[in-house]
Length: 365
Image (tube, rainbow, N blue to C red; front, side, top):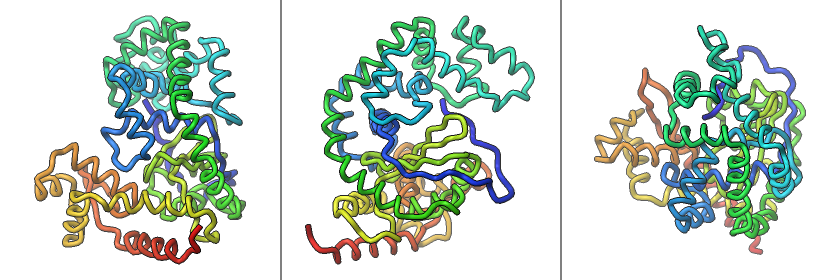
C-alpha cells in the first residue's frame, strides 16, 4: 500500500529545502523492508540477502506483514536521531496512534472526488468489516495480498497485539545482527553525507538536486514527487543497491538511495567509492543481464515481451533483470501503450568504466 503520485507540475517548482542526512530510523527500516524483496529485486546488499536466507518462513511472513500490511503504522512521520530512539517511541506510544497513522495514510484524499469515497473512507467503516477494508484497498490503493491484508485488519482491531508484534519483530532484527551491521557501515554513510553536504543545493529544485545525488536524470515519476515536496531529504543506504525508496509525511519526502561519491566532490574514503562501483558493476556480472544488454545494443528499442521471447525467459526473471538494469541506469524505460519498452543507455555504461578508472587512479589505502 503506497501513496498515489502527486499531480504533475508545469512551472518551475517553488523553493524546496534540500538536505542529505543519515536519517537512522528511515535508513534502518529500509534495510529491514528489503528483506521481503529479495525475490523481486537482485543486486541488494549482502546483509539483506544473508539475513533473508537464514530467516524462518514464519519470520519472513511476519516481516512481510509488518512492511506491507502495517507499513504505514511503522513509517516514521518525522526525523529521529537514532533507530533506538524511534523504536523506544514506538514501544511507548499508545497503539491507537499507530493504527490511526495507517488509516490516515490510506484514506488520504487522493480519490476524494470519486462517488461514495467519503463514506467508504470513514475509519469506523473500514475497521468494522474486513470485506469493506479489502474492497477499499483494491478500489483506491493498489494490488493487494489478501491474506496479508486480512491479518492486518485483525491486528487493527487488536491494538495491543499489533504494537507487540511490530516492536518485538523490529527489536529482534535490530539486536539479531542489524545493530552490528549498522556500526560497520555507518562510517561509509557518514562519508557519503559529508561529500554531498559540500554541494550547494540552495538554488536547486528537487529534481535538479536529485540528478546531482543520483548522477543521472531522474525519471518523470520521481521528478513529480520531489517537485511537489517542501522538503527533500536524501538518505544514503548501504543495502538498497541501485534502487530508490520514498517515504512521505506531509510536505517532506525522504529519498533513500545507494551510497555513492558525487562526481563534483574530490574522492574521499575508498570504501564509499568501492560501494558505488560494486553496485554498478554487480549489474553486469550476470549472463542473462549481459545478454539483455547485447540484445538491446542491436535494436533501438525492445519491449519486455520481446526480450522475454527472444531470450526464452520467464516473465518474473525478465522483470527482475530489467528492474536492476533500469535502476542501475544501463537501460532507459518508457511506456508504449500498456507495454514497458527499453533502450540501451550507452552513456551510462561508458560512465561506469570511467568511474572504475577514477577509482583505480586513487592512492591505495
